[in-house]
Image (tube, rainbow, N blue to C red; front, side, top):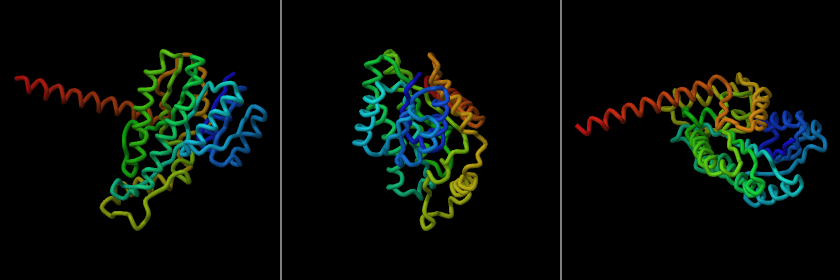
Length: 276
């Protein structure tokens, strides 16, 4: 049986992965900014759940919570970095405070929790780190420039960490979901204020922002089904580096590879021409 630490366990993928891991008999350190929101997880898991208050934007709290979690459980086997937020705004419409908050949670919070748990994993020469990226970490969309930036950062960070820790018996997996019926586009996301909207972006960023907000909670993906795949990967002795979830995510990966291939071909043509 494995011991998990899950950030953002009160909703979305965090909640469903916690419930799925508990169904399989694992122990879950379920963290959230408000532990009252973890009541259904506590009810489902009983003594196998350790609820802890954690804001991933609070460095001091990260250090104390991860240390206590390690001490109480004897060691974290699986870190599921799920906590994250969205922000809908055309790049020019964005507010710096919101942009910095998003990066603090989506990138620096994820990095800080990972860094805090790596010493224990290194000592045990085992562990799995599962970082929630997005199809938005593979390709960009209007109104999501800073969200895309954060998930592109998670992709690059995770790839580098994976190469560093693989010889130590530690695995890193990127989960790349398409649209799923989580709260990501609902209460978890902020958006540009009406007085900052720029009409020139109404048909691009504005349309995508409004469409995403209207469809929040009605996306085609089922988080419970995704949780099964995520926990399966955590139990895999040789997991893939990437776990795309949903048709749009798979299409996003293929599109990204096509773009890279075309770019390489174009560069090769220009480079060879320059030699003539």
